[in-house]
Image (cartoon, rainbow, N blue to C red):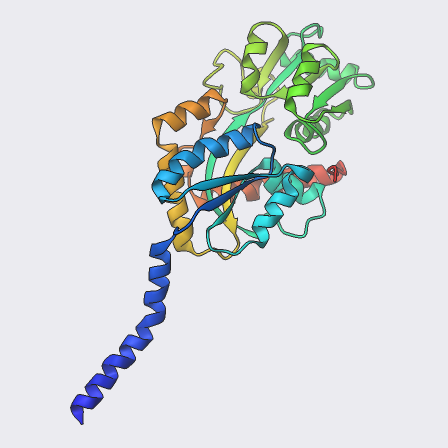
Amino acid sequence: MKLVRRKFLKLTAGTVALPALSHIAKAQAYPSRPITMVVGAAAGGPTDTIARIMSVRMRIALGQPIIIENNGSAAGTIAHGRVARAAPDGYTLSLGQLNTHVVNGVAYTLPYDVQKDFEPIALISSNPFFFAGRRDLPVNDLKGLIDWLKVNSDRATMGTSGTGSPEHVGGVLLQSVIERNFRFIPYRGGAPKIQDLVARQFDWTFTNPGNLPLMRDGSIKVYALAAKTRHELAPEIPTTDEAGLPGFYLTYWHGLWAPRATSQEVIAKLNTALVYALSDPEVNKRLKEVGQEIFPRDRQTAESLAALQKAEIEKWWPILKAANIKGEQ
């Protein structure tokens, strides 16, 4: 009788352990098939480039292919909405940035929440913006540009990469700081915008480090970097703090998310793969070549991405709501 009871207890203990063992086995098995990394932007742009650079090394760490899926329609809202609705199994990821996971929450009426419907994985990289003007603009430093905008606000023009783009929201912030309104000229992307700045079709804009050659050969003027520290690729250009506009920062950052309720075991594996990729010298080199600054190792975490997104929402949403910024559907 005792022997039967002993066998029964062993069987019962084994049955109780099955769900836990099954859970562990599932976590250990991930990933067992290709992963889709969704990019809410067209192929060939900065966000897509970052995704493709990262995916090569993350594939090595994860042991599975990473497929890049591009859809820039409606500023990426359709693409990232797909991730928000995807199964929380780690096989559909969202590589997004300031616009897709902050600005779009105000600029569009979304069927998902940019903050609550995603699980942060890690911060990747960022690039601060430079104040730049047409080469014949009659000012030579940031203070002169601000003074000129105040005097000429009724006819001053600023080029942007479209409604709700980083340049646009940065321009809205500047308007609130200097208490002047100038006119926005929206373009369908950064390339045509810069072409027209070189052609002197508008007065000034924000631009990224990828256009440093145009700044250095005199095609456009550069006034300051909207960041706390000088850029590694352009140490000669002063920051806004140094140039007379203290505290004015505009940075385009990128991060990686999974759908809400994705298990922490899967998040941890994805974070490990991303950190591995960012530690690779070739990845570092290629990201720097496209003007990206990699976040320090201690900020390559889910917690840091969540904190930055929250801080940016608290900073930008009141400004964008006050300006009634609405994205193009």
